[in-house]
Amino acid sequence: MSERNNQQRPPVAMGMRGPGRGHGRNVFVEKPKNAKATVLHLVQYIGSSRYLVLGMLAVMIGVTLLQLAAPTLQGQAIDQMTLQDGSLTVDMVRVTRTLGLLAVVYLCTAVLQYFQGICSALLSQATVRKMRTDLFNRIVKLPVRYIDTHQHGDIMSRMTNDVENISQVVSQSLGSLFSGALTIVGAIAIMLYHSPALTCLSFVTVLLSTISTAKMSKYMRKYFSRQSSLLGELNGFAEEMITGYHTVVAYSREERAQQEFDRISGELRKTGIMAQLLGGIMGPLMNVIGNIGFLLIAAFGGYFALQGWISIGVIQAFILYSKQFTRPINELANLYGQLQTAIAGAERVFAILDSQPEVDDGQKALGQVKGDIDFNHIFFSYVPGKPVLKDFDFHVKQGQRIAIVGATGSGKTTVVNLLTRFYDIDQGSILLDGVDIRDIPKRDLRSQIAIVLQDTVLFSDTIAGNIRYGKLDADMDAVKRAAQTANADVFVERLPEGYETPLSESGSNLSQGQRQLLSIARAVLADPSILILDEATSSVDTRTELHIQEAMLALMENRTSLIIAHRLSTIRTADNIIVVDDGRIVESGNHEELLRRQGVYYRLYQNQFAGLQT
Image 1 (cartoon, rainbow, N blue to C red):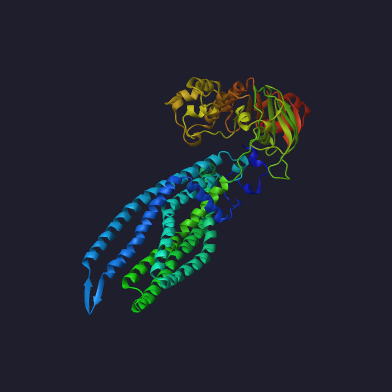
Image 2 (cartoon, rainbow, N blue to C red):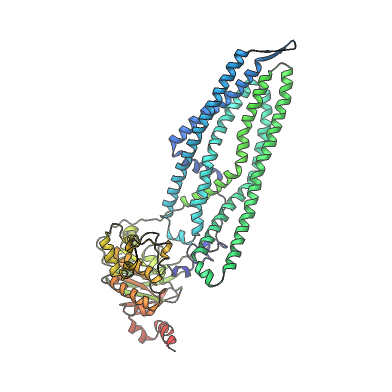
């Protein structure tokens, strides 16, 4: 709503040029949350597909056991080749049997790894589908205040980019992490069985890897979290520029928009480079540490073999087990950057999921609504300590047409926000037919109210679908009757596809006046007890305004109506006109009475009409 943009807003939204929009220069950048809590929350989502998790775990156990068996079989094959008195002796029967068994192990491993990939893909898609569903369900239940104070593009980025990063980690990395943990446990057990001394040497690489990871992670995390926030900021800016493209071009601000985009994009590039550089260091560093471990095993293993403590086959098997032992650690290092990006994205997703949804504590069911409205000494502020409405008090009788006028920022649209409970009042009460609206379920309350805004909202649907949004179960005859009442049927029937004409985004393939008539038709179909017209004609020409006024008069018939208007010509026939100035009612009366008083309304009227005539 237009008025709300001019009121005092929470600090997060300062600098924006509309609810939830802006360049993001003053938008709060989320700090990294607790990584442990985020991971645990993510694990709960993954665990919701318990059968897939159990299936993948079973497959991974099979793969791990087979992979652990392979080095032992290789060592046994090598030990069948002995050197005695200068001649090589080979037990071909045992070697052949061992190699045949090794081939079966490799074949089964390949088959199970294929099924592991299928399980990972299914688990990934099941997880992100549930997460996207929960995220969207939470977004549609968030308070209007939250949507007004957060960039729309940033919210969209959490549902797309951040969830996609989580999907990639679940599908590509989760299996590696699970199998890696199993491999480490199995490899350690077998290594201890063959040689406790060599096993202790292998732990040197683990110690070096742990220290390196701990040191690097605290530097990496802040860059990956900042990268996610900047990506959301960039999406928000791009959405604003595309939405307001006509204004950008009209004022020749293309270069400025490009400079601002380059600034955000440049900062994202620098942050991304640092994040990727730090993430890229981990892989080579782990490889160096792993090679140090192989060198220690080969050197000391050779010494132990010369002493007769272990066989050559055991050394071969031990080197392979050591590689299996360090492989998961190296994989984790190589995936560390991707994991950090996913955790940062998950934090942003969970920040919305953990947000308090809109509270609806109303329990009194509405009966037949007459439309009597009482505003009793209302005080309200968007920002604590900066009141927008101050002791706002007036009464509306059933079927009355009440106009609310005043200068921009005086608090007109805030009245509508409070009546619909988009925001709740700080002090006072609003009564509908004598019942406090805070005691009425919001769904019931809003079902009795229809709103026609200055900026029409149409969806990428047919004309009939957009009108039917006011009453989803309405048949086509009801849709056509609503269009006729709104004077929209004339232009609709001229279209090649009539009511089945598809609309582009926001109905951009229609004129502003046509879009407004469709929004009025939607309100007609909703058949509300209370009608709110918020600057419904301020964006159209005078001729179109006449058609819209005719449609609005038909719509207001026998309904309690609140009309917010800058054009005073649209409210001359109102039963009562409320003049608001700095959040207070300073005058009230009909058009003729207010002109005779020559007060605030008179001056507004003179500024609009008398000034134009001179």
